[in-house]
Image (cartoon, rainbow, N blue to C red):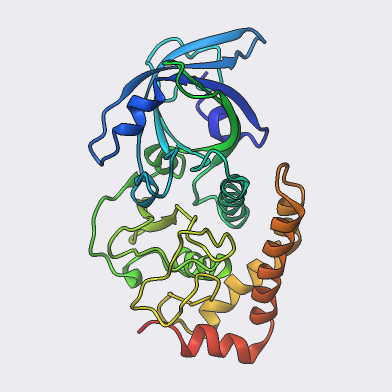
Amino acid sequence: MSRKPEAVHSHQTLRFSLEADWGTIFKDRSQESEYHPAKLYVEGLDGSQVSLDIKVRTRGNFRLQSRICGFPPLRLNFPKEGTENTVFAGQDKLKLATHCQDNREQYEQITLQEYLIYRTFNLLTDKSFRVRLAHITYIDAAGKRDTLTKYGFLIEDEDAMAARLGGTVLDLEGIHDDNTDQDQMTLVAVFQYFIGNTDWSVWALHNIVLVDIPPNTFPTPVPYDFDWSGVIDAPYARPDQKLPIRSVRQRLYRGYCKDPAELQPVLDLFNRKKDEIYALWTAQEGLTEKTLKRAIEYFDEFYKTINDPKAVEREFIRNCRR
């Protein structure tokens, strides 16, 4: 029996340790970065302590830069054998979203909020990336860095996500938003407005994965990478200069024009899910009262907008992309 779902489909915080030569790994920052040896220590399914020989490399784009993240995002590469007694059984590769900066609490709050954004989208649709929160202890094999424990989260592999949905990843740029599954596309566009994110593009496959799910004629867009969203308001996040906003806290709808009849079911879905969304954020371990309060206030503004017909007309109808 495959245990693939356990690594990312459980909502219980996973605890494990990673030991590697972090100095060497962090010097290797490029789109062609190499895998480096590492050990992952985790409690086995039978309660025993398990040591896995894995490989780790840096990944990402903006957060890959050393001036932005002293501790960049990682990709974990698991061996084909030896994982059977762990939650990582059957896994090949997993993305790990890290805390970015070691000594600034704000960045761990960013990590928790981005995790919650993924979880929020899970509440709205299964056509989304599954994630699992983790408390990770990082050990330097070279003995040059202090051991530290931080929040991070594992992200479902895109091919595994596509397979779960009965489809395959379509790695094809130049597809217009109108040539995708329109129910999902409208949901994605409104969701990005909900979190205040303009850092995405279907056409350029920027923070969007397209999934071909038979018998659907059009591909399904699935969003990821939400650290530039307004609800998080990361110190490094800036809107594109071509956009008519000057702060990521300012919402801007980037969806193409829809008839009100197409838009309303998505707004209704957000209203139905409001209590679940707020409960999810309120219950999150590690989130400070200040961070939670600011996020809920930001969401309150969204709900005020979508329940005001004039505001809906202004934000989603008149300001839509054409």
